[in-house]
Length: 72
Image 1 (cartoon, rainbow, N blue to C red):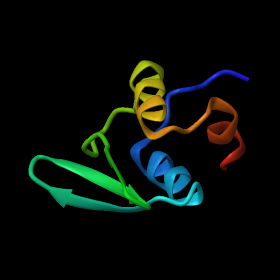
Image 2: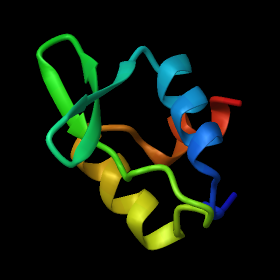
Image 3: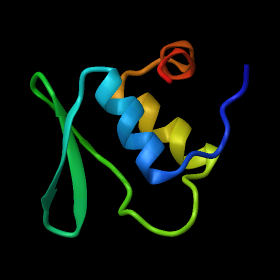
């Protein structure tokens, strides 16, 4: 299966299902925490998070495409 654009609320919901806490606010961008990892996430806005941005965030967070697609 392929990645698809996702709303901010769906993005946060899936990150929480994958064990991340938050989002928290520090400075200009929200972030989420898991163990000792901090992942900056996009600000909430009216547009979906693009596949390109989503794949970059997942790579930084160490989340595989398979894990992401199974979290729903």
